[in-house]
Length: 424
Ligand SMILES: *Cc1c(COP(=O)(O)O)cnc(C)c1O
Image 1: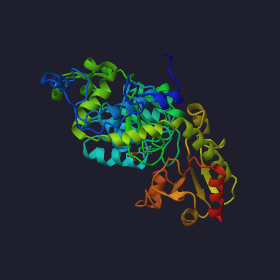
Image 2: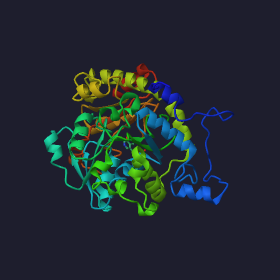
Image 3: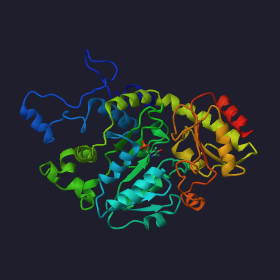
Image 4: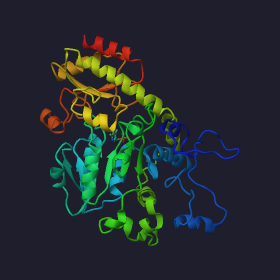
């Protein structure tokens, strides 16, 4: 069959029932799977046969949803994780160990920043954060002989910087390491980083992919393109025998599936951050309408951003869809059909005015969440980043007056009317 379009993949990919099987992807709510002989099970443990034995490693519901996400991104394989945090940890930890180093854009989600800068440091893995808008030479200067990957976010949460994916891919490949991109905000409907040279993509599926704020989850997707064996000394975990798997070498045994197989066979086995099949089922329902929801999010966000930028109570607005936005040109290149539904802005009068505005909203709810069907709002300086001083906030790229407005899929006129009455 000819390559299917994203809209068709959203609805159909991942689950192809055979005669008499359920049309809808079932929830395999089972921890374990039955075999006829002891030998059959032994072959699974040796990774000599494909098959399910324990849901911590693999589950048919999760695998079908992971296959849909892999198809949408254009990857060779994917795994679901219990959260976006787990996805980013696995993506890096699969190729980094104590004593290693990696380079990351500093414009990333706060939880990821903390994971990389604090928790992974405790595991002996060091990160250097770089300004993604710096020159190639400046970013390359952060690399060391023990650097194992480069990391960035397509559109950063909450500061909405757009990553120059081709530039980052060029830098990573010039240093013999893969580029990992967190593609949560645009989703593969609006951007497919593999088409621009990224090697591995991660997601917090909690956001637009689920889209209904029901299920925390994550995903790791591999393009299958990175030539691990060309840099075998750098990636011994993939290119040298795994003693915990009878001396098997992932690149030799699994080719393009080496990275995903290692992530499943080692990281899921030992760390166990699985997504529950129930959540995977809900995620799949979300994915079935992702291609319908993303354009509506973008259309509404564009209308909200235009309204805000023409209102004299508003000090500034960030949205890459605005022609004057710093990232407009990059967004046009990587996301010609729209970026995402999140708009950030500041009100004249700063922090106190921001709080009064938020408390006056009626339709838009104050929640920690972002990027789902219902319009919601957050003031990072008062909520997610409240432990930081104004100076620390500025250093993290989060202005103290920044309001993160996540535009939902309601009617744009109603959302704008709510903003208007709250501005008073
Ligand atoms: C929310 C988010 C994460 C973390 O995902 P969880 O599902 O909350 O663990 C990672 N990256 C980005 C860009 C996010 O928005």
